[in-house]
Length: 350
Image (cartoon, rainbow, N blue to C red; front, side):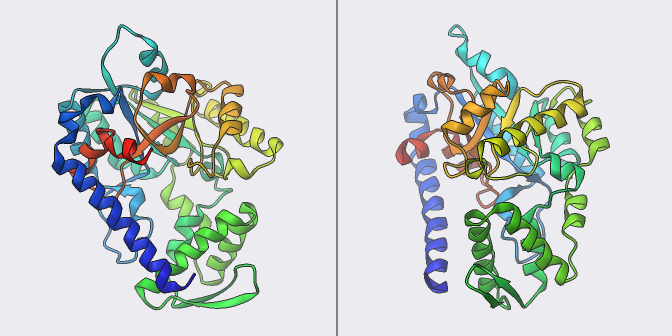
């Protein structure tokens, strides 16, 4: 596919999502059909921090501002959603006498800004939250390839890379070219051996004077910080594998090791086995029935995907395959949260 076609498809997708959210928000359908929202929702967050000033921010969808988080919590309270810990959710949904609607807040990857900027907001509103941690990020043995790629592309006007058909020179002098290169590298990670792909991206970064481990050290909480975090009764740690790999692409032995190893890391940090698990990437290409069964077999009572959807009693049939709603940094408007919380966009898609 040519660069222009890839760009057109990306722009069209973003416009379609924004248009759909606007239509749901402006139609008042959430008020007309409140039952569609069912029993509530689980939010997915990553970074929570002040808005950056860099022009090239391909990972901007993974970050929201503290102000938007506060606005979202206030909205949920106004809509009658009760904030609860993720670990308590299956039991609450199973109680037929409890008709409340619930909301859970989850944050993936254990970023330092979760403690610096998100935790004060959660404390102010007395909202419980779960941080899913990756062992390799904590120990600095695994790098965050999407952050590494952003750092490289922000700095270099071109780079040499072998995408599978020999080394080629990729020009990234313009903003559109940078975004295109970012998407190509994302597809490379998704289609090649992930360990090798991450290693090659790390080598690319080092060749251009960028330290991939330094990026992890700057962004992710280390063990002492995580131990302090869980002293807050509102905070819980969940497991997010050892190396943040697409579990669906792993052989059974590696799958088991990634899940069990991440659970052991949480025990090391907290003294308690984790109740909740989060699948890296979490979409249909990264988690399926085998992975859901593996999470249950390792003792997790609840596990979350990134498959979009709201909560219902029928979700109890698969508590290790719960959907979530992304607080997307590209759509930081109250009316978009209202549209998503209504459940209507997911009904239209499903």
